[in-house]
Every structure is written in structure tokens, then in C-alpha cells.
Length: 250
Image 1 (cartoon, one colour):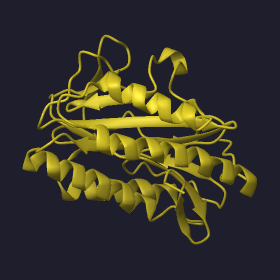
Image 2 (cartoon, rainbow, N blue to C red; image 1 turned 90 degrees about the horizontal axis):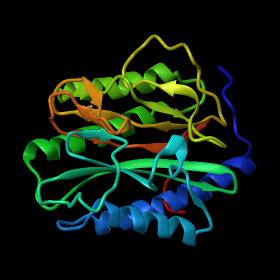
Image 3 (tube, rainbow, N blue to C red; image 1 turned 180 degrees about the vertical axis):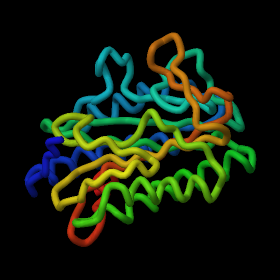
Image 4 (cartoon, one colour; image 1 turned 135 degrees about the horizontal axis):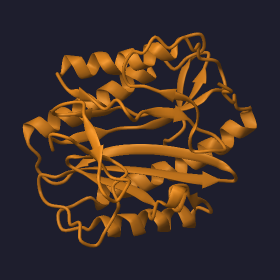
């Protein structure tokens, strides 16, 4: 496993890419409302990324047809935006977006509530976001990647939530997906984190079972029991003093 550690110059470019991703999420937070289509959200994200002299990382990636992944309710990840998908009160929607700026990628996902959502869904969003930040606490030099995964798993167990096991976090840099892969549960991983590593941490937790399947479109991942799923992700730089979140507003 060849993990690329980034220079100060490269980290600065990743901060610029991450800022553009954060601008998209700031716009999504305002735009996610009852009656909006996921295609409209996709077009807004595309416009913001292009206005900031970057490229949508996801668009065309292995044939993916959109700027964002828009995954609604029981959809876990990789949902296609469409004009037919209209947000309703009570929905939750995961929006995953990447921007490539001067050759470097920022990647972040957030799950948003549409109007008033059930207490169960509120708990799912709170717990999944909590698990992200529990994992991030271990993103410092000489800590272990296993501790990141274990912290996420412990929060999921605390709330009795399912953990998506086939998908997880990953290194980020010149490519959207670099080594290492990051499971959201313990796997006896021996990797020691080092300054300069840049990794996307992204727990995906379910209100029901762990199990997921892929729809006929070859992309959209759904929970097997059709219960809601949430997804939160930040791209993070490992430093001696703890995590530096790169996908935030500058």
C-alpha cells in the first residue's frame, strides 16, 4: 500500500478544493426544501464548482452522470439526481460532492433533513455525524487507522445502528480514491497515521441492518431492509496536533 503524503503546497491546493466543496454544501443546506428536485440541486452544485474555476470530480467518473450523488432515505450512496425525484417533507437526503482544483480533490458528504423529519431519522443524523467526529479525533500522527474505525463503530453500537460494510473512507489527493481504504468498523488494521496523509473519513450508518444492495442502474446503493441511511464525510489532513479538516470554508 503506497500512501501518498502531501507537501505544504499540495495541502494548500487541497484546502482550496475543499473550500469549493464547502461552498456547495453551504448552498445545499439552503436549497434542500420540499418541492425541489435533486436535478436542481445537481445543477446548482455544478454552477458553484465551475464559478470557482474547478471541475466536478464525480461527473464522468467511471461513467457517473452527475456532479453530486443524491441519495434519498433508504439510498445509502451513489444516487442519481433526476427531475423525477422531488423532495418531500420528512425525507432525508445525503449529498456527496467532489471538486478538483488545480489537480487536487476535495470530497465531502452531508445528510440533510427535508422539513420536519421523524425522531428516528433525527437520531440517525445526529449519531452518524457524531461518529464522523469521533473518528476524526484519531486523525493525528502516530495514532492508528484502526482507532478511527473503532471510534465510528463504537458510536454506531451506542445507538444500535447498522454499519455499511462494503463502502468506506479512502485516501484523497490527485485522485479521488487513493490508499488507504478506511473501514467504519474494526478490522485489525496496523496502519500508523503520519503527518501529510490526507484521508476522507465517511461513516454510513443505517436505522436497520448492515446489509445493502445495488440497484439495476449499477450505481445506487440501498439498504436491504429499506430503512433509512445517513452519510457524513470530511476530507482531513493528519497533523502532529490532530485533524485538519480540509473540506470547510476558508
